[in-house]
Amino acid sequence: MLIGRKKEKQVLTNALQEEYSQFIAVYGRRRVGKTFLIRESFNYQFCFQYTGAANISSRKQLARFQMALKEHGLKDVAVLTNWILAFSELKRFINTQPAGKKVVFLDELPWMDAPRSGFLSELESFWNDWASARKDIVFIVCGSATSWMIKKIIKNKRGLHNRLNHRIALQPFNLRECEALMKSRNIVMSRKQILEGYMVFGGVPYYWSLLERGASLSQEIDRLIFSRDGELYDEFNMLYAALFKKPEPYVKVIELLAKKKKGMTRLELIEAGKLEDNGRLTEILNDLEWCGFIRGYSMLGRKVKDEIFQLIDHFTLFYYEFINGKRHSKNYWQAMQGRPQHNTWCGLAFERVCLWHIDQIKMKLGISGVLTDEYAWRCLPDKKSGRKGVQIDLLIDRSDGIIDLCEMKYSKKEYAITEHYEEELIQKKSVFMEVTQTKNAVHTVMITSNGLTHNAYTGEIQNELDLNDLFL
Image (cartoon, rainbow, N blue to C red; front, side):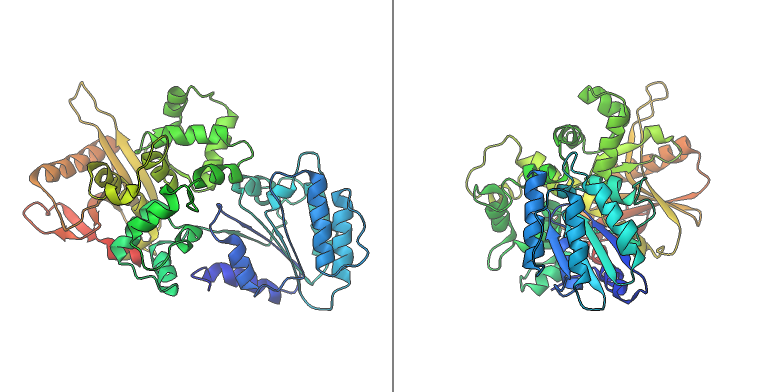
């Protein structure tokens, strides 16, 4: 059963009604449900489907492609020694099919592009010289190696430049979609449990699909992640190896950001990791952002070079907090519940959940139709003036003359603002207005996991949201 993805499915199925052939690229991180979306959208009916295999030679890849052609019904398939012959045989096969739309689906496309194989140039020729000149082809390519898909297909500056009819960047589920997935599988979970699951798994559908009925969420996390035979025990290494041919430099940047939950500027990354300040670092940061592992925030009123890079992938952050380099006893995660490390993690993880649900926050604030920019902002301490440092993880700069300063707090019961915290909120707002010299009205918005206690110190709060609002 396909959960959500209505717009994406519509794009795919609409291609069958178009007069001319359509070329569609689908990309997104590993396990996000790309292949499932495509198969469900076309009811598993393809003229031809082939999935590339990872880490094999071009010769073996071509042999597998040859077998796929035979399995789809092509007779007397030539021995495929290069991609010229492979696409020639694919064209011959398509020409044997009945009239009507023919859906051709190449999955895990980046794995087919072995060095010096000539794959990409023949793919370009297949589309530009043959398929695009027809009216009956729906050509879909897909891949988890998001950086490859972006560079070689989406932003191709050669033969495929501006040739795509549609591109679908498949995003992880939001909280509401995770809730719908659990209901579809008859797994009973409260919204607080779904929130904690999201803080571990993010919105990756495959991770959620591994949960089984009859056990608590803590038990399932122990089974899947902390047991040696768990399906996600080695997921971290597999995740980055699947996305990047040489994952080591990417993991190094990820490790640096994992140590600084509030994020780092490019200069801070270079100094902390002794990295070279060159185009390769720019490429790594862009790739990680395209894949959804990090988020680059421009600080309001600052130059792009001062951009903050923040690690926002839930599973990666969970890995570095609780898994990397640590030994685990039996039922580790169940034993962690309520401990100081767990409580601290919940606070930081809840902030990241909010950052993944900005659309829902805007909807609750009634500003879905208002043009906005989202920022992080920080101000370092100034010894001369005595000004304290300020960190604001989410600012919503609205075109209607208001800036929402969002505070995000996790608690197991209603959150109560203290006198000290009220003073901190006032100071944050004051420093922000002084340093930025903004003329807009600045509103403090409180986002809590379990509601807000109204007391003598809530007067600074202009709007408040709770967990249910993130499920909109």
